[in-house]
Image 1 (cartoon, each protein chain N blue to C red):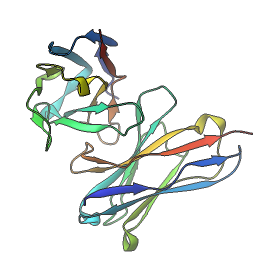
Image 2: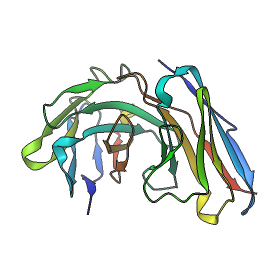
Image 3: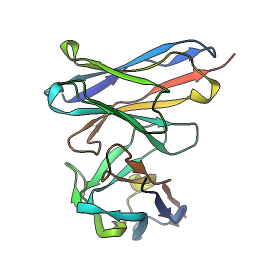
Image 4: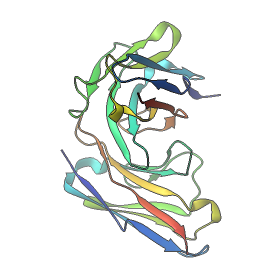
Length: 117
Length: 109
């Protein structure tokens, strides 16, 4: 089955670091870009950035440049999204997705991040 | 950055009715690089349309996309109960400043 499996929900405190994952299976992981999208509670979808698992080419939306880091370990077909110092405003659902072009044809189920003191 | 404005914000319709959703871009979207997604509560989005008018795999033919330049439309010919959801457009014309519209909610009248 072609799928993206995301890591589980997290509850963190402000200032803590975090790395969430997105594992692809059932297809050639290095042939498609992987992207990340944020959805804040009750809000719409926001592009964060993308990475190509084949060569780790990474592109960030200007709104998220410097705020997060996207990485990949192609040996285990897994992409990552990480923060060094979380803020309450990072509370959101985060989706990863596969991009055959620059649109998503396959989505993970999402990882809910809650940042609260 | 291309800003996408979707209208209306909410569309209240009955099953069997036709739904017409609009997505307007602040600049021309070249090559019709526009996609539509459906999102139901508690679920990830699902791709419906790419390239402005190509249906994604497994999408029923009651969903159709049209338009070019700055004006795009998603039409659901006859609403089924499972079609009540939020719909987003997304342009993928300008790397890496791809953007989503703010969404249109289709709810039951």
